[in-house]
Length: 324
Ligand code: PCA
Image (cartoon, rainbow, N blue to C red):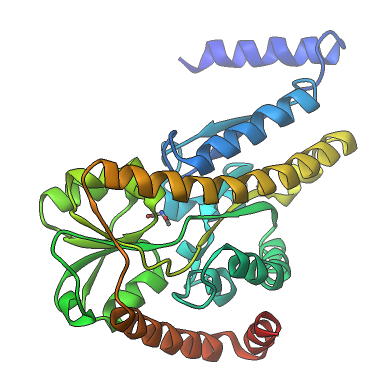
């Protein structure tokens, strides 16, 4: 089985050495979310543009929906050069570094304007901390506002007591715990099944993920809390990046900057269209009452205080810069 592949490799190497084919780099890139998701569509656009700009010299092969590497392992896989590039939800790794999760602290930076402001002050911390791990951040794009999906009506925070609540990172688990719910980590592909079997009966996520998982088939209510905009990060192993030609590096960085802008716009567009679709499919889209929003915000401010303790002097500097 292995032999023919080796022969092909040898032939390719011989041809390359003879100068008959241009040097070609191929990167396998694991990403966590499904094909229909706007993050995945954007990273595929990025890969296509890079291929064009480098005349096929750099081909990035996107493996979506955690099909190549499980989401919790993608950061490590890029760090150890098991794969040259990858995409993650940054706050999935909030336990490894508090600066990876400030964008997922509920009710700290709500709405896109605030999310952008937070990104500006968070960016250099994330980039330098990733670089210490041998990782270069290429771009970062937010999710639509985080909303609460339930099977049963949610009129007050007390209605979440004891509810099995799907979470996807340490900060959403913390939020569930503070609300008296039972946090249960479930990756996106398993969400419909977990609802169907009552392993979970509520969750926090975006309208985009609600569409990806056909939320109307397992939940009744969508509470538009707009709690925060967690961000994905598209990244590359720094040594792999340095292995490119200078022209290729320039192209990658330029297209990454474009992908970032496209992605921010897509998040907003997706939020509007997805909320509409959820309603059309029969979900009740609810504006949460002022009273329950006040209860949620209180949990959020507890979490910001706790975050600042974890994040130390740099954390305080970030919060001060954001609030200025
Ligand atoms: N969707 C992802 C992360 C945030 C979001 O909106 C999820 O539910 O896992």
